[in-house]
Image 1 (spheres, rainbow, N blue to C red):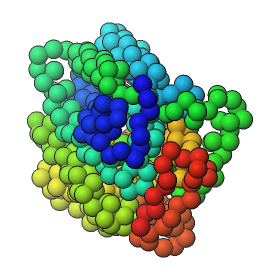
Image 2 (spheres, helix red, strand yellow):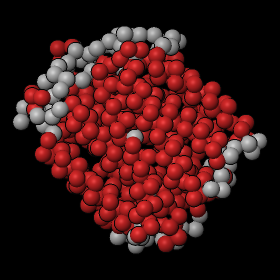
Image 3 (cartoon, helix red, strand yellow):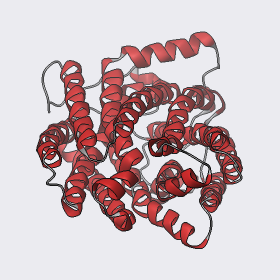
Length: 429
């Protein structure tokens, strides 16, 4: 199977039309989203059945998965750069399905957390490989557009996942949620096996050698755009992790409306899909920096507004849904653009760079999110403070990266000479 021609927008040379390509990338990303969001309605039942005494410890079902997801990304990049994208992806989907079935039969909370760790480790492949595959085929604003379209399609999963989990709980024990996760991974793996070509040409593969890996890691963390936007994106992602971890408790204890959790969560998550659609339409015209920098400043202002509302007890169910929905909308405009800007100069080492960036982003995000989630004490104040702190720290990093100038267009220099890249790096003009 021949590697695709990245200059051909329809990918007709290898049999995949553009929309199928985007749909497959979105489905791969959805494997991870389902692994997190479908579990949320079941946390209470899992805690009761497996004897979890401290309610906040139920959040470990999410936190362990996310932590392993971050660590796993360190491994998939070098493997994908050496052996290609397809074999690594297919093996990871098989492991994800197997560990899902192990989790379904866990008889203790400790065993469940071990299974969740391996599940998250396998899911890490999706983040690394989607970014690597898209970067193999696109660059610049076109890459940001493709990622936004995939991000938009994949974000329909958080809208549906809690409802899917809730529907499963209506007819079966929580164990069956893991059967659903494993079945979806098998479906996506078969789809990729049948339709996805190898996007990394044989002459561009890198040996798994400590020196070459160290060089790739060094390039990734020494480039200020790569490192800066990775850390800034990780901080903002931490607010999302904090919301995911504590969302069920917020609806139950803060808003006293547990029966509205599925529909409220869907409404909030739906705003991220709207943001991704908007970003796909405007990013090629306005540029990644104009869109994401404006959204980051708006996130900080919105967090400043939310804090007194929560502090003085003025937050009702619908006020929370509206304000959290706006927060997630802004996150949708920040996340994919920060990721694209971090990856843009890394085309020649896309697999390893994606691994390192994913690890760092998830490490920062998990630490911030865990701190937010474990601070829950009956109100949304810790969540609002978390988003505000994350936004301010991300802004400080962006200002350093951009040398004090926001919104400007900029030509990013690649980490390798242009001749070594699969396509010419497009300027964000």
